[in-house]
Length: 248
Image 1 (cartoon, rainbow, N blue to C red):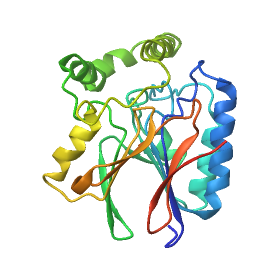
Image 2 (cartoon, rainbow, N blue to C red):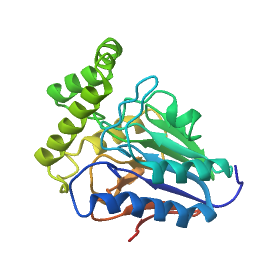
Image 3 (cartoon, rainbow, N blue to C red):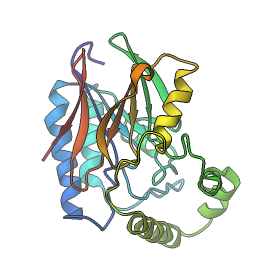
């Protein structure tokens, strides 16, 4: 890994989702961003929901994404670490992305020290949530015996069901979301609970489809990374400060 260079964070590409403006062009835009930032990157963090649906069988992976996966593989081959965080749409990974594409896969929140600052990075699904129904849904999604049973479905059926569910889930929620106020935002609540145990300078979250920086007072800065349906938003660490930017 390079000892110097910038660190980039992005999330919620939702590659494969047939919604929003120019779904096919979204992957090309992400690839163009990756090839643009790679020459000056020390590390790249992809913070969840990279794919709109990803169910990985032992010998089968979803069709498509060749431009994206090829670009990531080229970046990791050059020695630049690429971190992949699972989200609520692509948590069903096995070892394909790590062994074939060289990505470092994270399935839970990750805390690390960068240039003397403490970063806490997570996609964000379920963190700080008070919704019992949503927590039960995530438990079902993450349950290993249930995942084994689902994997018994033929890929033609299992992946088709997942793609259909994912599409309807996005239309039900809406593509863009508004800030609900700090008292109602689950991830702000979660960040404050983390700060009771650890000193964090920067929280990096995806999931909210909302590009914004929130100054949490003594509880660190929160970066909501937004999405790539309309904003093309990402965060850039230059060694001394963190900036939220847009790529078009």
